[in-house]
Length: 114
Length: 115
Image 1 (cartoon, rainbow over the protein chains, first blue to last red):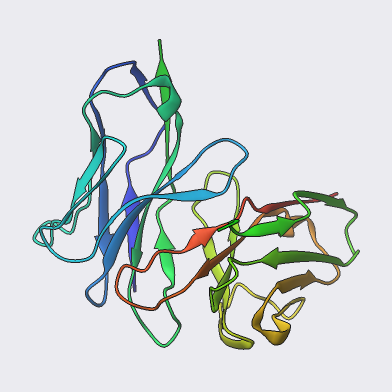
Image 2: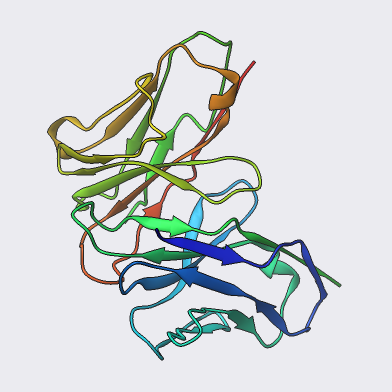
């Protein structure tokens, strides 16, 4: 089956620190990969995506590269801000007759302190 | 683009009662999804509509759950005879395309607490 594994949180960093959140996946087909972010009390927002091997998704200073050989899609940011504090979800999508169904990891909480 | 709208934001109910949630997708989106998210977990797929047709249901969706999307616009999710294990955030999402990488757009969710 399809599954996503994320590093456990919470991850606590000081402002301007470098961020890496690890994500690996198992898929029966060729997935598209996503990172979604959830701020407190809100729904999920798409952060970035990649649809094929070696693609790099980027948005708001965050980046992730689709690595087929290691089945990974690690999220990175060079300098985090307090406003980046949120829960980050890695997800995969495989097109089936069931539409664009996403399979999510368990999420990684990020806390950024001054 | 007003985004995906869900109502209510919060619902507290007693065990055994029925509850109904509403989702209004982004207006031109023909695909609509329901997910459930429990504390500390990622969202789990419940069901999917393309226009008014319900095309897939997860085995998480017991016979106490029913979803509809009349006329292919808004959708409702009803839970009958609620149990404490139904307490969760219920998320609705919509999308326009099926192509690789076409993202789902999520609403802010309805948080259900069953006492």
